[in-house]
Image 1 (cartoon, one colour):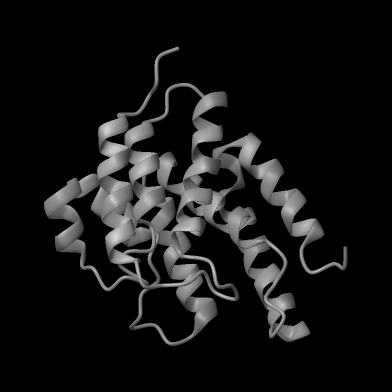
Image 2 (cartoon, one colour):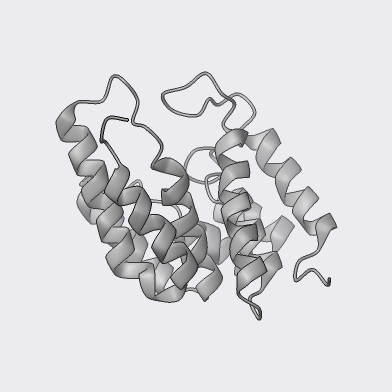
Length: 181
């Protein structure tokens, strides 16, 4: 079976993200942040298995790097210098604009920028939210959980057309989110 992505490019992006996010913990847990990044890339790898013709390098590099600007303090230019303009554009679109104070507008802005990117970037955003729809942290209020679920629905509504496989996974995760087991 032929891979649609380069393992060396994957390793380079993985190690870059690991160095940048090394001291961070996955919110609400004591797990290293790279657990989240690894799970997002796993969701993307699953899509690459079921949908031929995607640029696996772009999808996986963006999956691995999707939080290095927003949560790791890297700049667009730093990403561009190592991974090129297309990956930097994708990572930038996946990052919230810190100059926008209102979280709802921040998400709308990010989704608008994602929709201007190749399909692979859309897939990363859906995979990211699927991964984030684990049981909410215990300290979250019912309103915070409700708002997060509403945001997930907004992501679904904006991006579900890109891939039926991920759309179904996201839909199931949204339906189960915040409900007691």
